[in-house]
Length: 102
Image (cartoon, rainbow, N blue to C red; front, side, top):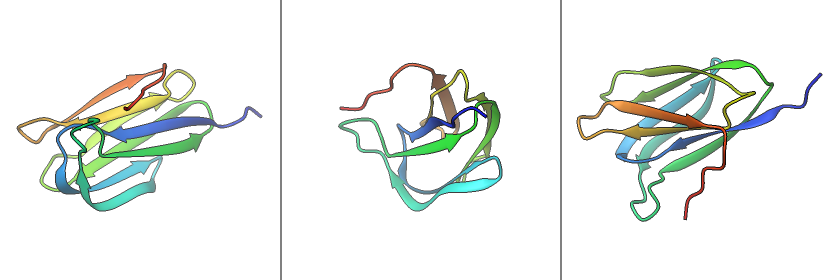
């Protein structure tokens, strides 16, 4: 059996004190009542999750915003960056390379 890989879920731009819940494959991996973006680095929270390679479901619930549901293949994707737009909607960007924060 293959070793688990690490997938990092990063809450990035636009969070101003909202309650955020992140669920991976039905398990809550983050439940934070007040998520705030640190504007200097464009990051609010970063959650590393160890998963077997394969497809996984990620759900992000933010107070007052429609739930974001995505599927990622942890064999190809190493991070998912979630940002909140000015209108409150959620956007996601994924990647396989390094994602650095100053």
